[in-house]
Image 1 (spheres, rainbow, N blue to C red):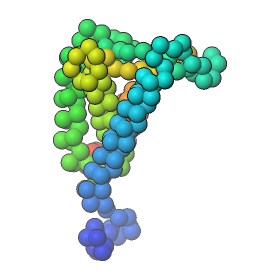
Image 2 (image 1 turned 90 degrees about the vertical axis):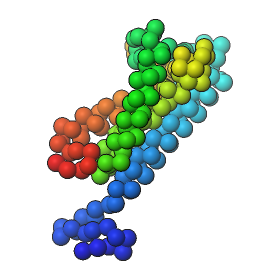
Image 3 (image 1 turned 135 degrees about the vertical axis):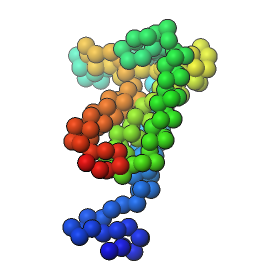
Image 4 (image 1 turned 90 degrees about the horizontal axis):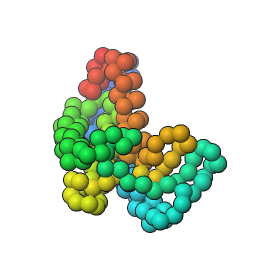
Length: 176
């Protein structure tokens, strides 16, 4: 049976959304989170540069501006160009893979992955010292944890969602 929009309706009553629904969700998540990442980094640079850390929750959470030329936890600090190239490849792969999306979980997970990769890549391209060698802005600090940013949060949740969907046996195209 067909609905008014042309999507098929299975005998169990579930609506099968057209592929564009999942691609739109993917791009909505990616663009929204990327914008939040860039806005919070700009705000952090404007308000925290040259200041001591700002305690939000004593002994738990503070705002502390720093930059990172490496990967997570400051690893690979001398490999900024390689990390930039890797991020470009990841972004291209994720955008290409998005055309096969037929699952909301995968759409959100890959959207977060793209947002996180693009968020930190944007810093590497446009921040000092030079294009593809720029340092990533980090400003969120949980006690006993390295300083991070919104893009890092997106990457963490992307990994969790991709693991969850894979563990559940759900493919990017929604098949089991």
